[in-house]
Image 1 (spheres, helix red, strand yellow):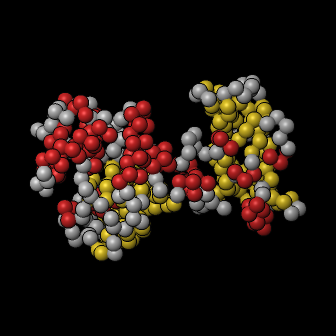
Image 2: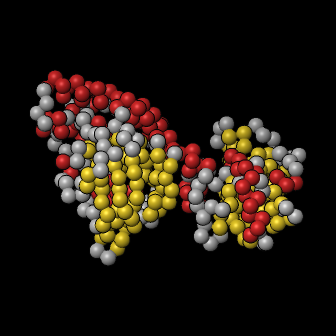
Length: 362
Ligand SMILES: Nc1ncnc2c1ncn2[C@@H]1O[C@H](COP(=O)(O)OP(=O)(O)OP(=O)(O)O)[C@@H](O)[C@H]1O
Ligand SMILES: [Mg+2]
């Protein structure tokens, strides 16, 4: 199993640059998830690793050796494509065993492997069907099965669960997590679904417009996003962003707007030096705001609760605070009156601040 290093990887289509120097190291057995909005360059990156797209600039190393001149078949990879690319004239079993048959593996070994993988993917009943006789989600699972029967060192997945319904998606996500622990291979997984990214990844790589914004462990990115893009991309409901002004009051520094004057703590107090009425974006996650009628003023957020959406154990409140819209997640049994301005509390350690212009975390 190789370590994989993308060294200042660039992709150009004619004059248009779609990857701007991707720098990424993946350790052995690591589950790496590339995540970002549509068009940010995830599939392009994966296809370059697989050898299906040429490298415009930079290099790809497997175990320290450059591979960009190698044919896909010489890279010991198995890939699941975004559009499945199944062989239409072969049934499920033959689709799944294709690579093994090419390698002329013994029949018994092939049958065993196909049965095993089909059982994991819930496809045992469908082994004799052709792709045209399957639903989209079933086809997607066959595409996964075709990769998983192979004995590759590295598995590349491009949105392998995108056509499954929510329940099946959750199940497959858990199966994949289990499988990756069991097989101990390198996995590189592309998705635009941040929940998939958070739950599966050892390392998340957040991309935007062909540039890596941040990479690290899921908790790291969730707790310490380096900029507003990453902060807003990970987490549901997404982080609230409020316009605020930093005000130094004596030794202390406050983030202030209509409806709140929150006293900053910890390393953020260092901002008092540059505080003089600097406009910032204050970020706070919906789950980090709680209903607290007795909150002290320097932690309080006055919110006019407009709408309450019941989603089971939690309710999501859509609120207004001055000119800022704020989403809050509370336990559903919290007694709240709509249409009134109520006091909520924010833990100062959970406040994020971003520069208005550069959007970098402060
Ligand atoms: N053959 C091509 N010629 C020109 N531009 C291309 C080509 N293939 C991809 N692109 C552009 O490169 C960018 C990255 O595309 P890519 O397929 O990697 O995005 P993605 O992150 O996988 O998006 P999605 O989530 O929609 O699959 C896009 O802006 C796309 O329009
Ligand atoms: Mg894609």
